[in-house]
Image (cartoon, rainbow, N blue to C red):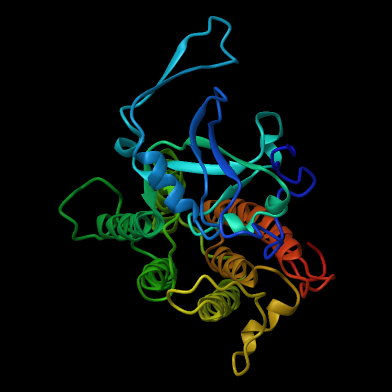
Length: 362
């Protein structure tokens, strides 16, 4: 018997369209609990086109299981909750690896099919390792909560700074009202744009985010919204050092970044038709000049997003805005780097000189 399939430890990715199941059925599929290495489910004569979603549903039909963890010195029992169906399949993830090479294992999406696993046609057994991710939240819900919070928080702080506000909690702002209004319009407008894109532009798969991560992300956006709103509306707020020329320069950068970000989102949306799983290498779009950055970076939408917040920081000259810009850039740079690695692994057409987020640099 040939050895079970394990992940490519050097890359963690798989090439698609490889030889698989010359016959109409697949080799044995074994689902193993990640922590205990206990076999949860064994399937024979599975169709090669079977998706991970179907395998999750089959696992969900199982009853109670009691597992022994090999990592626990006292060999204490691990109770797998009353049949996996009670957990909901969105909490499950599978990866192709073994316990000791988990770092190299690739998490398999629900749409991933068995015949997309490289080398499976040359083995008598495919092992899928199972782990419970905990309570999950859909990505559209995540975006709505993340983006609605800053919008509401900024408007509430703005209202509480008005001289006619009945709640005598925050000192009213009396000077530089025009500049503060402009900053508020830009900040609120940014998150209105994000909400509208969530509703009308972005296409979401059935992927989810752990509930714990939702709280962390919301806290990040909401606390920064509170600090930015507090300082830009504070009575002691100091206008930019170079006056209105600096404000207009920052405003120009902000608007350019917002428009470029929107154009890139439209281009990314159009790469995959509705209801399709087609994946294509992003590229510049004719008659959309701001998408030219697809020639130079993997994630120009992040490049333009960073440009927007640089413009906002220049326009307002506040430390909270600068901190939000720098932390946001660092986070998006990590996402862009991972995206670039995925493009290089998946698409032979990926340009060798392509950078992650900063053209010609990073």
